[in-house]
Length: 500
Ligand code: NAD
Image 1 (cartoon, protein in one colour):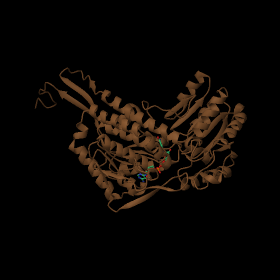
Image 2 (image 1 turned 180 degrees about the vertical axis):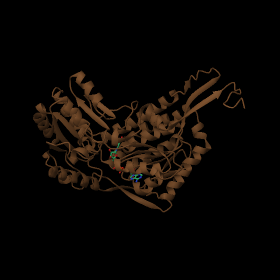
Image 3 (image 1 turned 90 degrees about the vertical axis):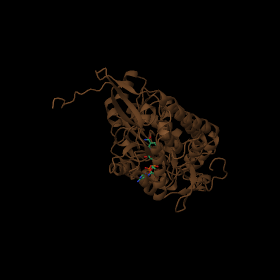
Image 4 (image 1 turned 30 degrees about the vertical axis):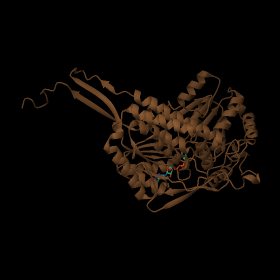
């Protein structure tokens, strides 16, 4: 068991048909703490055979029909029990998430509270999602549009919000009556193992929720090319999303993609200075920028830009970088050495592209942080929208600054991206605010706020940020098929050929 275990070493990790099992080939993977590079767990590593067994278990459970036919109110009760268990184990899971991802303990607590809210939201929503009666104009016909579970789902999640992203999938899939095989990121699997332990304790029937662990190239691919999967719900990078969409096309498997972002934050000269500086810092540097909706592209009005950027740089340099378990830490390490190397390559690229590095651009000097993959909050001023550091998702603490002089120019810059996940606008002029938020082509737009969401509102991207939506009623619809039932209550002859 991962819960109650100290240390976390040698966790079990494959859960199939209601049992914790070992992988056929006995593979394992070491999980590292990014704050100091130490091993915190060794988890089982599946191969294609294990994945096929897990999919077969989910298929059998779906075909047997008990879970899809369980009344939605009973399915909702399971979600409530899961939420209650998460609440009971809140501190333990927060600790696991922080050790695994590097994020601060308070961020992990916030994530878990959000996860609990998502399970509770779908438990409330699903029983109210009524079927629709359609008026055909014929009183002898009852025409209904009903929703049914889509079937067996492959749920694939990234490493930056492991528990949160997986829960955005498991909660609606479960309450919709689907069965599933979940695969967390091989970099951060631990909180998902804990979640599945709680789902087991909450009484999910065997085969409804299955868990596999392993690399994207082997385990992820085995989940996405299997014709017995009805829906692939994926959150991760755009390149992986494209690979999955191509693979899914072979069997016309439904795909929901939540991909990356390069999210603009537009600051007009009339914005409240202090709250704007604060929000830009949070948007860019929370979780060291490893956030799909991070506001790492500042677009600021020329007349205030010098002062605004100077203040940002001053405050960014004071953000305390350190281990997530230390209460004094404000932002943790990058998730791995490999990922830090990628961010460092982007910083070198920014310098070679001619942007002005005004703070950060290096690892912290503190010798106590040497063994972790830390990187300082970094700001590049005088950027142009054709620079790669402005267009590409760096997924690190790297803020770029562009300047504008007119509202139209700000909107053009804000939409000058292949992505379209999220954007922020700061102005005290309500009419301008409304004009600009409507003009921006992004799935979420914050006006005088940044980064907030609610389980009741859809989340997802325009453009290369993906398709489909999670959360809200749309997030439930992803896991449902739509069926039209035409019931003739008084059938009589009257077809095309009655006269023949
Ligand atoms: P990634 O694409 O490398 O991996 C995501 C998941 O896909 C992992 O579980 C991985 O093992 C798996 N995978 C990798 N290759 C695969 C393949 N060929 N077939 C099937 N599965 C495969 O992404 P990451 O680095 O883990 O996460 C960071 C990315 O996730 C960023 O781009 C970020 O913006 C995005 N993200 C998006 C959202 C959103 O809501 N839109 C939320 C969080 C993260």
